[in-house]
Length: 248
Length: 248
Image 1 (cartoon, rainbow over the protein chains, first blue to last red):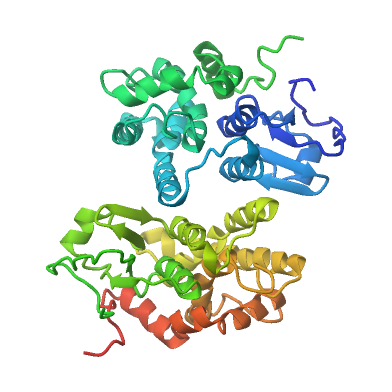
Image 2 (spheres, rainbow over the protein chains, first blue to last red; image 1 turned 60 degrees about the vertical axis):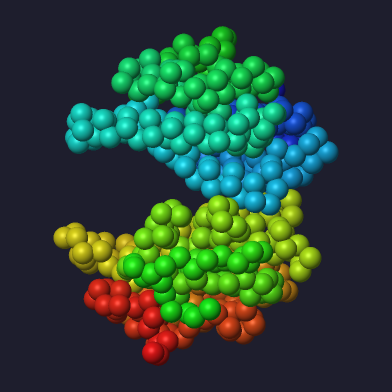
């Protein structure tokens, strides 16, 4: 299936029986979480890309209208990247579980409750809202402080776990849920140089970043910093971006 | 252990070995979720009540400072009512799981993503913030509309499931997570008569309410509408409330 995004006016691509389908967007970090789990667990599936700026009518009718959505059959849909990833992990157990058990699973969930400290300022800095008070220096400085604290939390936790990945010696659920936003951090620090993500400040998390990018599923799904910077620009300037870089 | 709440100036109650401890508040619906699961699964534990208006110093030092917290040992804590309930359910499997599996588990999680449509306006109406624009009629009307929509979502889902409980013929995780806020709805409709929770409007959810209140764990943990109304009043007027009704 082509990576080109479905837009308004397109026809619904009929679902073949027993095909797991992901509605995704190439620029959406939450969709990438699911693509990573699908790739890592080697789960057969198809991806239908959606143009988030110009969504197909059938997508809005059949689903809640946001990516990612996992479609199991004509009327079975699962929403929310975290829920989808856990579903996939639990149903495709044969390929090894990404989740810890008992206390450690609970602690992983508690840890991820902090991830908004990274995603929320990330989104504000990468895609500044165009309201009057949002661009003043104090608001921005506050967001920058927030994301630095977010990095610190995850850096400290990794130091405490004393392992290469949050999942231990191999990447687990926390690693894959975190990666898509973290993949975009070098682009973010290029866009806004006051955001710091450095080896000297976050040794453990910085090293984690370099280990993660070589995990096969990540290497297969990730885009480089130049690509992300171009997406930031296109989204902020209202230019088309869903098919950026795909060629004709 | 007394139900009386620990306050600032109190000493840390030493933890006995192999004792599961819940830091709870009698007025906190999120704490009640955990108490319901503990009671329903008959899990041995102790409850340490915390005065949320006057928290003990040791509670603020040892934990993140919000109830509920589950303490497993001197330095093992689990936070977040949803995470704690799932932990308990998964670790105490012998007593039957409260959670569905696979697709149905994912759908339960997706369903609970909507529960903020009830909890958020509930909180606004029960404990109106004291800011200038929060008490105007338009804001309140908007919150009322939101909670009615929330009731509708859960009523429709229950109709679709065609069962007495969200968990089927017996209550499951969704039922116990929902109950504590729903328990307070009759008090809310008394406080604010424009909120409607009636048999004629929400047949399935209304009937669910009456079935739920007779579930043994619920019957044991719930307080009546008069009690909740008194708590609303005391919280809003800044009066002591942690030990309300306990006697000397």
